[in-house]
Amino acid sequence: MGRDLDLLAALRTPEGAEALAGAAALSDGDPLGTATALRSRGVPAPLAAAAQTQAELRRRAAAKFGADAAAMFFTRAGLEQATRGAVAARRAARLAASGAASVADLGCGVGADAIAFARAGLRVCAVDTDPLTAAVADTNATVLGLRHRIDVSTVDAREVDLSTVDAVFCDPARRTATGRRVFDPSAYCPPWDFVSGLPLRVPRTVLKLAPGIDHGLLPPGAEAEWVSVDGEVVEAGIWCGPLAAVPRRAALLRSTGAIAELTGSGSEQAPVGRVRRWLYDPDGAVVRAHLVAEFAALVGGTLADPTIAYVYADAPVETPYARRYEVLDAFGFSLKRLRAALRARGVGRLTVLKRGSAVDPQRLRRDLRLAGDGTATVVLTRVEGAPTVLLVQ
Image (cartoon, rainbow, N blue to C red; front, side, top):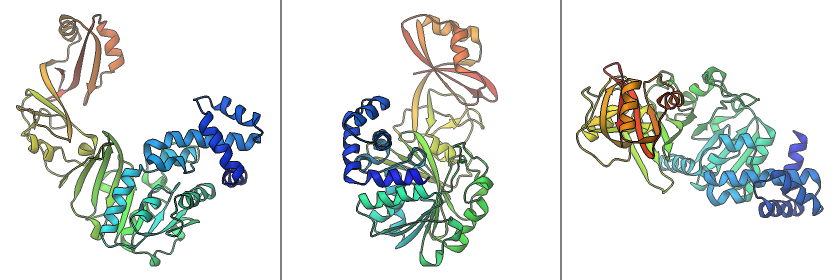
């Protein structure tokens, strides 16, 4: 740990800045070659390796942090777990709009959310139990010109005096020291009993949790929001106390800057009907938020099976909340019949979508033994409990 802290400090020196610039210029996807080239220029081996690592992480971070990534510092684990810049900025703007002036960021990581909070005008008390991670967060606050709004400490979240802030943001660690994912909330760090108790201490509490969090664990009266970015569900945000506006929300962000939000109770049941001409595959955030019924109402749709989140409708409706497919054929799952239908269309390349099916797509492709120049998409699902194949486009 001490060596890593020393290398982080060395990267902040003029010599380190030169090494970073050299690594960024030399980098061509060959880490060993980059480090070797830096050493040939007289850069000490440890500093060359550290600069090469940072250059690699900065390239990867650009997808999350945009232009900021070129100046920031990262750890591998910290970058992987960091909130995307657009998601953090949206959250910070909403918290600031609530009237909050200061926030405790419990489990700040490399500082993604702390940076967003500071840019939204909040004073931030950021803490992390890992000394290197906290040092990286402090460095990022400095290089981005936000050190006057962000105070970073290496301390256990459970020891923070919350009487000095009017809002809390907590992102409990959901990985072990070896990087293995933790799915049991009681094994979070800090543990779930502390995290779930925060709204009782500071009503303006926001929790960042894994998308798969059990709805039954959510604090009473809280708003649960599932966020997706370009179709990938990235987190569940829990807004407590006066921050809660609706029971459930699905927020769909696009790299273009577009945002679509669907809200509802999360307890409605969509009507069930037959397979119809158009199949809608709702965004994962809509499904996770239990808002499929609300989405179905938007397109005049129904489910073909009450347990499967595919929505069917008679008309094509433009919507940001789902991908839409035209159903060309539908029949009970039969390898022989599917093979015949695909061969009749000259299909050689097959895209397989599935929901509610135990069929392995790779094995299915092998068993079909397709040959041809055409392409096709099939959906493996259930209709009234029966395994079903949909040929779609």
